[in-house]
Structures are given as C-alpha cells and as structure tokens.
Amino acid sequence: MNFPTFSFLINHDTTGKQLLFDLGCRKDFWNLPDPIAKTIDKRVPGIKVDNNLADILREGGLDLSKIDAAIVSHHHYDHLGDPSTFPETMDLIVGPGFSQHFLPGYPANPNSPVHESAFKNREVREIDFDQHLHVAGYQAMDYFGDGSLFLLNTPGHAIGHLSSLVRTTSDTFVFLGGDICHFGGAFRPTEKTQMPRELTRDEVGLPSSAPEVVSCQQYLSCHPNPAEASSTPYYRPCSHADSWYVDPSEAHKSVSTLMSLDSIDKVLVLIAHDPSIVGVLPMFPAATLNGWHQLGWKRLLRWRFLDQLPIDGQPRPYLVDGTYVDGRRVKTLGGTKI
Image (cartoon, rainbow, N blue to C red; front, side, top):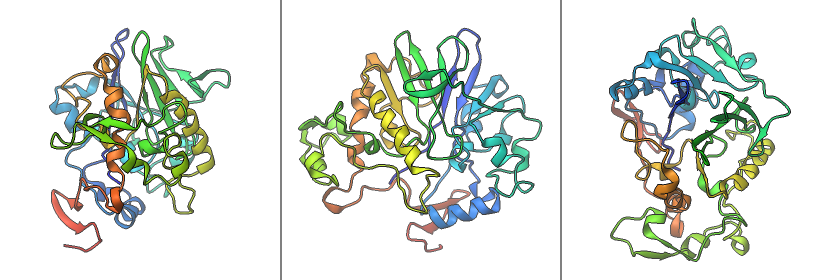
C-alpha cells in the first residue's frame, strides 16, 4: 500500500491561535532512537522523506513561534515527527497513557519513540476525557470551549490515539482521523454509503485517458466478500500478532463509529495516509479546506481508494521505489542494499 503522510494546520479565528494536527515523519528518520530506526529498516520496505514539517511550514511563510500546540494523534514515528525542530513554546497535546509509556524520551525511557530532546523544556499536555461528553460517537473534549475543535478518543491503533473534529463552517466539519485506520476501504462501502454500479473517472482518480465512466465491477470482484461487496468494507483492522494495532478489537469499534460519521454529507473524513488526498485537496500554503463542501471534495475523495486495489491481481504503482537516506536510494523495495 502507498502511505503518504499528512499533517494539518488549524487556525482558530476567535483567539488567533494556531495548532498542528500531527507532525509527520522526520526527514532523517535513520537518526530516530535505535529500536525505532531498526523497526523501520526491518518492516518498512520503502520510505522517502524530503523535508521536515518545520521546514515546509517555514518555507510557506508561517512563523513557527506562533504555533500554540501540536495535537499528536499517537506516538508512531510518522506522526510524532521531530518536535525539537519547533520552538519550545509549542506544547504537545497527547492522548491518555502517553506520559506513562513514553516520557521521558529515549534513552532514559527505552520504550520512547523519540529522543529526550523532543520534550526538553516543552509542556506535554495529556488529555483526560470527560466521561459525559461524547461527540460523533466518541469521548470528546471541546478544546476551545466554543464547539470549533473537538479532540476525540479513538482507541485501538496505538496507546492514547486521538482524532479531531474541526468545524470548517457553521454546519460543516472535517474529521482528522490520524491512524484510526489506514485505508478508505476499511470504512467504505457500507449500508449507508453503498458503492454505485458506475463512477466517473474523476471519482476513482483515473487519468484523462481513461473512459469518462467506469464500471465498478472490477473493484467489486476483488472484494473478500463478493456477496456483500457493494455494502461492506474491504478490510478491518489487522489482528495478527505483529500488526501495527495495539488493540484490534478496540480499533474495530472506533472504525465502526467512523462508518456512520462518514455517511454524513457535511463531514469530510481525512485519514493520515490516504493517497487519494493528493491531487484533490490543496497543499499548504495554497488554500484552506474550509470550502470543501461547496467545492465537492467529498464526492471526489470518497471512492478514490478503489484505485489502490490490486486489479486483476496486479498491485498499483508505488509512490517510492525503496529506502532513501539523504536523498539517495540505499535499498530496493525487495530489501537489496544499493
């Protein structure tokens, strides 16, 4: 599967505060704590990171000192990034259990995914969810107290996994899912969001050379449950012993709630590694996502995960052809060192 990694900049108009949702992957991932670097080398066949998030934001004209906090969906290396590249005034907002398991940083805490420098002189705020507030089916915290940003407890993938629901207009929202799941086919199709018999090439993300209208039969035929292919998701969270899910059963519950949320016309669901986003949503600093509903981006994104499926048993083209260190390819997808 192709896994681009996205971070999001949130602006709160009333207070002028700026927040980040996730910090992406650090450019020099090989300099992560040794256990993490070894895991990447062993389990990630291809990875290429051209820039740190801090550099992307700075080059786009953002003053990093103005960022109030970063919401870290979870501790994995492709979301926690490198906090040390940001000013110490930027707090880290983390989910339940983060402090107990990952503070202080490595090597004082051998289980921490980042070095101690990531937390030095920096406030780490761990969310304690109110048992009485639920939003969109999840335990929630109203971050600003005005209904503009809700932090959501979405357990299963990792310790203290967080998602966010961001108000974009008075009645539209963007759900930032992090790694609540990793593929659009994990929560689509459903009974409420059934796959049609035909889609336009734009809705699938096909090139202009493709027919204007395409049959969905080729996508339905590779569904693991052909009898219910148009109304049940392709996948569910992996329960293998070596999966990336700390609690697959909890992850399944979180994703099941997401299915209902995704069926709402005025909620746009964005997960952290969805390649469908590329080519549809504008990238920083080009524009904002606030007008997504009027611009029809949900329609264009909903079924584009289909183009990642192995049609006729053939995998889709990969975004990266191996492991890159300092811009140089050092290993093939098959693991051969160059």
